[in-house]
Image (cartoon, rainbow, N blue to C red; front, side):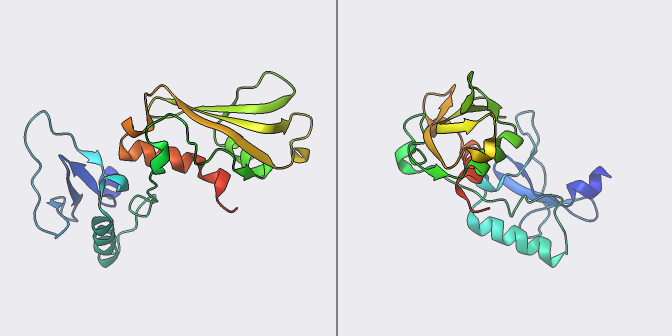
Length: 190
């Protein structure tokens, strides 16, 4: 079972990528034999598309298509997003602040694990502990009515901030992309 899953993914070790071939050997992007490096410092990991060039993502996708390999989840097809240059040196996503969003997009975040951080009758603050450590917080104006969320109307993102880091640029490319994908339901069409 695990071999079937492993064969459908791209793996990474020490910056090199490979796949598990049908005969259980390892093959690189050119389908040449790949040998895992020896040593305790080398760790095999699932390759994240943020660590692959656009060209390598395309070539791996073509290779998998040639072999009719279907991925169990969108690994190579996963979108990669980058921080707005003006957001990199701080902890605020100022490029999103002031954005107006329909109430139902904010409610979607609650269904995706965001916690209500407000203490009154209006939900105006959300937070989410991110898998890579920091906490993402969003302040809304005017906020969602607890009595009937559907009557809350359009919301303005008053503040979007990441706590627990010195600056957003300190996050690696994967964490930056995943942070922005977490916020994507707010700004993308339904």
